[in-house]
Image 1 (cartoon, rainbow, N blue to C red):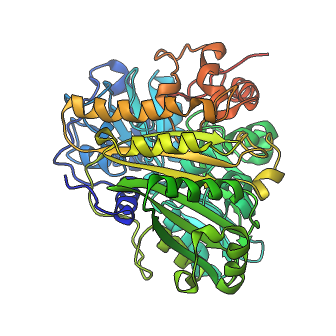
Image 2: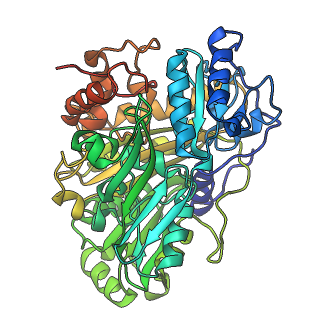
Length: 540
């Protein structure tokens, strides 16, 4: 595989890793045996509920479409097969159900529970560790929400109902088709599924103005372990709090969300500028200045940074400003003149055009897919409360130059603004006031050799370890939507204790983890909905 030769192409390359991969030829699934009576009883149970659902069930034994349905929204091919390069053995679903109605979701939950079959849920397939479609434990049924993707916009109330299987591109397109001045504050990647995105928090280019996606939810419809459909009033404020950032596949299946839409200007400024320093020391000065001002800029302005190395360390600054370029230039010249922003760098466009810009799509695109890529991916995350010292930045540069880095990227996501004014217990996402920015680490590689995978995994783990003294502590923070099984895992049997899960749970949720576990005990005491890092129940 040929890797990129410039930072912009590296950035586009790694963005594509978060978009769909589609090819069934290379999918070598390892499916748990389905000879158990529970499997046949499950199929009989589902088909007895409704004839139509029988045509929405795929198995490796009775459907040639099984592989393509499973593969369709796998975003990380590291977990799409079980060959010699895989760092851990994963079990694929014995069957996939793709419901088209909420009653079919209810039937799937009830039949799966009745016959003792573990259930997992997938909306967009962007789980970095593959936990939404692959398992380290027992045989399971995959409920794929791919057919539940309706979006209905109500402009007068500035709201929209969107089903969890819709990808962000579909949500954004529906909103923009209804209004040129309304938006939803969510992520940059257009093929992320809405359900998983909100379940872990969800951030995008308007984070500092409007907060996270999870901060802008008015209501939801949840199918619980008893097959009931609950809205906000019926589920209660505790469960409604938990589903907005407390992790997916844990409290039930959120089939639909009521989104709070926000007002945006007809024209805004959105663009990307790249900087290549003549030396690592020069890049250190630029990034050091960035991290000292980024959380203090006006709420309307957000600057994300992607850092990688192609011969030299390079940085791509992604700028989003909810206003015109004249005002933006004044703000930048006052606050961050070191970037050297010029008028010709600045581009004005509509909000929906900015979505396409940051996704590296053409301005007139209506696509929700991307070209095929076969690179594998590992991600990690951190939170920074005090700007990294120059020694830490220099240490990062020396490591991204290493051969083991391959196609590596660091993404800096600033906080401050509205994020500092929202309570750290308003939703399960706790990284609010006091957080300067979040670091997202990515490393990608190709090839099927196990030693290649281990070399790249070793690189990102060592970088993460190197930064330990300089990032958040007690606990060291991590982002739930950047799932990292290196932090710890639940017992494969589903018998994980609260104390065991605290090891990773408090890194994602800090003090909110205990409340999440108590909510879990109230809504799903039998721990029916679970995965390698779902919140376990904690009884009173």
